Length: 190
Ligand code: GRF
Image (cartoon, rainbow, N blue to C red):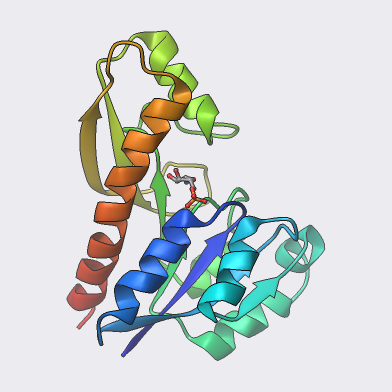
């Protein structure tokens, strides 16, 4: 049984989807949610789904050892970012080299980088007049949204779309593909 941990800062619908996907299978388990925002709805989901959560602050993450110590205990095969808004420090990147992945709600390398999250991404796609958008699953490195692209899926931008309607279409792609790509990566690790 492989171990997964999920880093999330907000709503956590992808986190929930991944937790539930692997509950129906024997290949992997989500062993902990790591969260940097005490107001985040993902913490309520963690309680409901009976997944332990670690809440940490900026100082813990960038200067302390709480997060690294917990990761050493959890020994995840993969660290999954799902709506996590801080860069990952070098100490964690090097300890889990190549084993940290993120999902971005657009077709990178477009519409990524610092400050490009949530509806800002979808608004930028609409402002540009693009006819398609999608999702990108990529490895995490020391820059925002810049690591190796592992998977993309596309959807249409429809006339009359708002950031909210486009976000809903993109969330459906995320829910379908994020768990599957995670599973595939775990399989490939042997
Ligand atoms: C997703 O759209 C994901 O692509 C982005 O942040 C959003 C998180 O949504 N990185 P949720 O918290 O999983 O509902």
